[in-house]
Image (cartoon, rainbow, N blue to C red; front, top):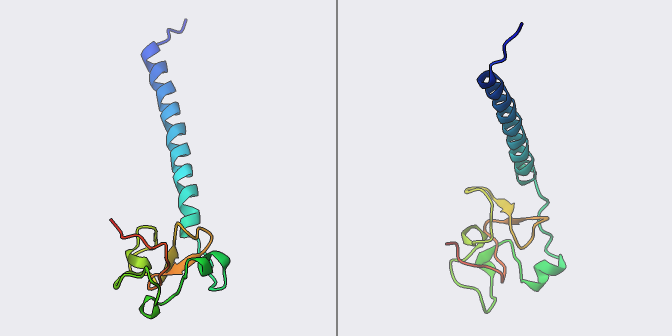
Length: 111
C-alpha cells in the first residue's frame, strides 16, 4: 500500500504553477519588447500630423513661435529613443521614428 505525502504533492503543484507563471511572464515581456526593438519607419515630413505640429528633423532651423532654444526631440518627455541614437520612437507619432535632433510643437521638457 502506498502512502501519500501531502506536503510533497503541495510542493510539486506549487513548482508546476511557478514554472508556468514564470514562462508566461517571460513570454509576455519578450512580446512587449519586440515592437519597441523593431525599426520604425522615419516620420515623413509631409505627414499631416507632422505638418500640423511643425515637425522638422533639425531643431536648429526652427522659427516657430513656441520654440524654446535648446529644445529638441532627444530632450522631450515624449521621445522614447535610446540615448545616442539618431532616430527613435515618439509618443505623438507611434507608427514612426523621429530625429533625436528634430523638433515639433508638441515638445514637452523631459522631467
